[in-house]
Image 1: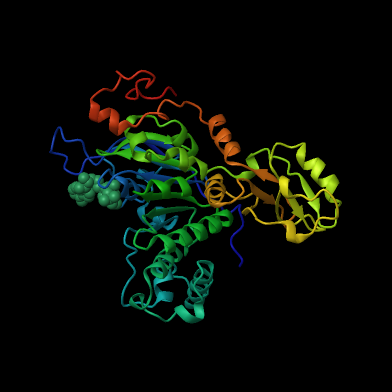
Image 2: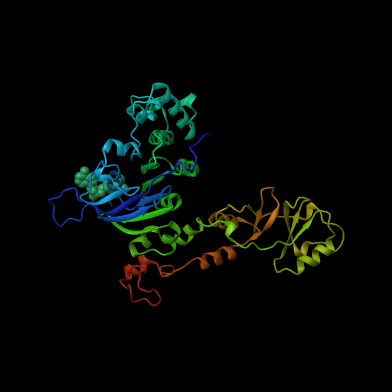
Length: 416
Ligand SMILES: Nc1ncnc2c1ncn2[C@@H]1O[C@H](COP(=O)(O)OP(=O)(O)OP(=O)(O)O)[C@@H](O)[C@H]1O
Ligand SMILES: [Mg+2]
C-alpha cells in the first residue's frame, strides 16, 4: 500500500462565531447553529457530536459552502472561505455525506472517480486512482470495480463513500455519519480501518456522529453540541469524560463515563506488579520459599523463554522435587501493553486468578495487572470528580440539585 506520506497532511480549520438561521424572518427562534467557535489543528480528527437536529450537518455544509453562514466566518489555513471560489474551495475538501449517496447507475470505479472526472483527469489516471483507493479502503478492485452500489453490502458501500471522498487527495475531509448505516461489528471494523488509514493520511477531518462512543474513539478533539446549535464543550475525549463542562455533557456522555475512560487508557500506562515466577525444572522448595514471601497467593510457572504456562497456588507447591507442567492448574488472560484498561478489566472479571499476565511480543512475562491497579489509575487521572459520584437522573427526579451534600453544584460550568 503506497499511502501518501504524513507530510501530505491537512489544513487548519477555524470556526469563528458561526451562526446559521435557516429562516431569517423567524425572529426569536434559536437557529440551527449558534455562535459556534473552535479551532481544529492540521491533521487532526474533530468529532461533532450531539442529539439529532443540533446542527451537525449544517455545520459541516458551511465548511464547503453548500450552506452559507448567516453570521461569522470559517477559515481554512487562516483564509476566510467566504472570499474563495466555491469550485476551487470544494476541490480541497472531501465530503462523505450522511447515507453514503452513491450514484446507483454508475459502477463502483466510476463512483470513486467522480471528483477526478469532474477535474478532467485523463481516463487512465482516473481508473488508476479508483483502483488505488479501492485497495486502500480494503475492497479488492478486481472484485468490486465493475459492480453497482446495489450489489454491495452496507459496509462495503460506506467504504466506497470514503474512497470517493479521498479521490482528489484533499487536505480536509468532511464525514457526516460515515459509518452510520451498518451493524456494530462492521462499524467497529470500519472505524479501526479508518483510524489506521488516518495514521498515514493525516487529513484534517470534521467527523459527525450522534454516538458518543464513536466520538470518543475517533476524535482527537470532540465538540459536544446541544439543540439550537450551541457548543457545550470542545476538548479531547479524555477531558470530556473526566470533566464534563455541564450537566448536559455529563448526561450525554452517560453514567458509565468512568468505564468509557478506561477505553482511552492502555496497560502501558501502568507500573506493572512483578510476578513471582519459576521455570519448569526449578527446585520446588526454593520456589515455594520465594512465593511465600510475596502476598499474592500464586506462583507463575513459565517455560524456558519466560512464556507463562499457568498458576500454581502457594499451598500446592511441593516441598521437594522439581516443578513440572502438571502442577499448573489455571491460567489468566494474557494481555499486552497495547490492551486498553477496559478490555483488561473485562478479561480479569472472567478469570480464575485475579491477575492479568502482561506479555511482550515474544510472549514472555513482563508483569501482572490487577483490578485494583486499574481502579487506582482511574483515580489518579480523575481530575475534577464533581460528577463522578452523583447520578444526575436521580438527583433531578428528586428536584434536589444543589441540596445534596458533596454534589458540588453540577449545574455550574466547569472552570476553564
Ligand atoms: N434546509 C433547511 N431549512 C430549514 N431548516 C433546516 C434545514 N436543514 C436543517 N434544518 C433544521 O436545522 C436544524 C439542524 O439540522 P441539521 O441537519 O444540521 O441537524 P443534525 O445535527 O445533522 O441532525 P441529525 O443527527 O438528525 O442528522 C434542525 O432543526 C433542522 O430541522
Ligand atoms: Mg445530520
